[in-house]
Figure 1 (cartoon, rainbow, N blue to C red):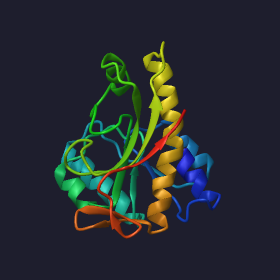
Figure 2 (figure 1 turned 60 degrees about the vertical axis):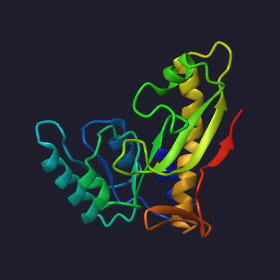
Figure 3 (figure 1 turned 90 degrees about the horizontal axis):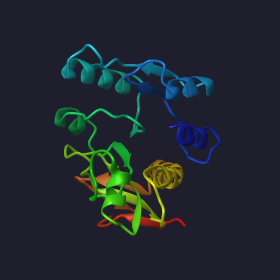
Figure 4 (figure 1 turned 45 degrees about the vertical axis):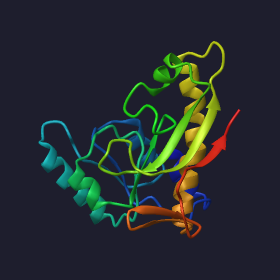
Length: 198
């Protein structure tokens, strides 16, 4: 979140962050956003049912006039109703080379499988968990002696490159949603753009 917001504030992404929303008070993202002069809002998840939470979340997004919903460290699974409301306007980043390893513990799963490569995927959010069209992937080699934490650190470093890049593509209208499918530079994006990191 902070990297994307900074890129916007410094003019490297032709957009502005209208609000940073968290489902928990006191998290680092809220404090960081406030320090950057960005409006923040907490929409509590604890103690309310899912429909009430999602109505409040939707109201906050719509009240602030957001054109794009960028999920960053937001660990709630959203209902199909909510996701369809923002179809083509909501993106997420996931720490694996999707469709491999949806869900949690992706770095350890890649190590356990003996994968030679691992990485992160920026994708459109659809009702299927981590199943929307993948836009951009970062790939890093899995090195001898890697642990879950060393591999995670290398993947996270790439996330700070590829996630702002995709937001910039959307802001520049290079990437668009057309009838349930992404278009990149006016052509159907049938497979993700891939960027390799050492």
